[in-house]
Every structure is written in structure tokens, then in C-alpha cells.
Image (cartoon, rainbow, N blue to C red):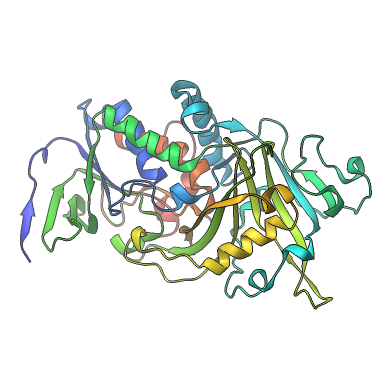
Length: 424
């Protein structure tokens, strides 16, 4: 195998970011904006982002997630950094129009699905039972069954779920504590803003991180359709490859969970108020059965009258790249039927996208992993394992990694519990 090498910039600070998802693109934005610091002897850093997908950035979970941003998310120390950064970014770059930033209501909905809207496809999906655990940051508790709209707790403007099928609704956070972005638009905006600041973009599959004498020296990658391996010299490497991170740095305790989702556009005239619902829907196991089971799709109203809905995860093996992720049509149909069973607006709407992505989870518990992995190599920074909270916690992660590289330490928060040394 032929080896070619890029040697320019090898002696000056050069940060190579592996992964064009929301963590990688946001980190690129923060680094190219700050440019330099004491740890680089105030020398401006060159920043290169390398992404495996032939379609560009945000092709995985960063483009197919719900886009929830919440003060009640976890881990708390990272949320405290991320939430105000989201607000600042939206104010600075017109996030309202550019990536759909807005505050939303968030609640737990309990009730029954209309059996007329459920068929076998919604009851026969195998392996779709892995919780994404997004509600871990929320106060729990069962709600009493009530009769009237007021007793049920339904907000006056939450009119797109069937009141007659509702048993209880409970707000899960106070006003101003929950917001959303369109994840694809946010990620690609960070990418474009970083390019305006000088980011270099490379398409290619990273094979490994190179190191010598205990320090990173670069990355080795292969372009699509090529057998030639190319080396990019680097003084710092940021691994932000999500579920694919262990493919690049071995023995990282990262597991992959496949999650399906759909997007629905209601009919013209059906307005969807801005709520995020964590549902518990009791549905019949079949049209002929008296037995029931509970399904828990999450439903996100988005700007533009779009609705995003997702279901549980599964353990489908991780493919080589994000471009090879497969979609189970039956899993998407189940999600569609489940949410349609409690909302005529969603039942009558048009399903625009049926999609799947892989979420990275720290197998030892906790996470994400954020910081310098000195045990592996000095200059190697890990920013991975964000589970379902990567959209929410991207700005805080990006700020932390930027401060570590440019300042030599994290100044904006205390992320000691997330350091690589905790799990490696």
C-alpha cells in the first residue's frame, strides 16, 4: 500500500478533528474563532476536520436526532456550560432563523392509543426495546387518572393530542428550561461558520491516530475509493467520531445503539404548538387481543410545522461508515402508528423521512468522555460518548476542548468526572 504524506504545517500548532458530527463541527467553530492561546504560545492554530461520509457533515445522529436542549439534561456539570452557550450562539448568529432555536414546553403524556390506528406492524418489531434513557434528568412519578382537560393537566394550546385518549399530562420542566434546535441545521451552520474562519475540510476514513514517544504526531486516513493511505501531521488530535470512536482508538469503552426516527408534516391548516412529549401510550397487543402493552415514543414539534418522533434503540452492529447505516422500515412504521394513535393531526400527516442513526454510550456508565487522554498519548483529546445528549452538550464540550488546547486547562467549568482517566 502506497503511503503519501502532507508535511506543511507540521511544526506549527495543527489540530485535526476526527468526525463531522455536532461535537466535531462545534469544536471546529470554537477553535477557529478563538485561534490561539497561551498553550500554543499565542500562535494561531490550523484546524482540519476530517469526516468519513461522502455526503459531508451531520450524516449520523447529529443530523437525525430530535434536537432537544435542556437545563435538566445530564451530566449537570456539562449542561451548565452548554445551555448558556446555546443561548449565546443563537443570539450571535440568528439561531432562530438559521437553525430553529426556540424554547419549548416539555411534558410527560400518559394515555391510550386508538386501536383503530394500530396494526400488526406496530406490535411485531423485534429488538426495539433498548431505552435511550433521555428522561433520566427529569423528575418522575406516576400521575393520577383524571376526567376533565384541566384535571388531566393538558395545556390550553396543546391541541394536537387527543384529549379523550389522555389520562394525564405533567410539565417536566419550568418555562425557559427546555429549548430545541434543528440538529442538521445547527451542525452544518457550525461547520460553515468554522470554514469562514479558516477550517480545512477533508473527506476520508481515518484508520488510526499516529503517535511517537507518547505524543500524537498525526492521523492516517483513506479517501473514498482509494487504496492510498494519507498522513496528516498534527500536534493535537480531537476524536469526536461518536459511536465509531473505538474503531480509531482501540479499547475505548464506547458502545453503539441504533435508534430509528421519522419526521411528519401535518396537513395544511393543522398547527402544531411547540411541545416536546415523553409519552407512555397503552396500546392493544393486537386488534383481537384484550391484553395491552406500553410504548414510549418521544414526539418533538419543530418550527415549520414539522414533527419528529423516535422510538427505542436496538443492538444492530455498527457498519464501517455512517453512509452504510440501514433503516428498518418496520421500526419506522411502528413509531408512525404509535404517535398517530394519539393524534389525528399526526395520523393525517405525511411521513417525510424514515431514518436511523447510532448513538454512542459509555459502556462503563456515566459519560461522556471529555478531555486529554494522556494515558494513550499526549495531545489526544477525546470528545465522545454523549448518548442522546450530544446536541444539547456540544457547545460545552467544544468550549472545554478549545480551552484545553489553547489555554492548557478548562476555565469555564469543572469536568473532572468526565476526564478520560476516569474510564481508561
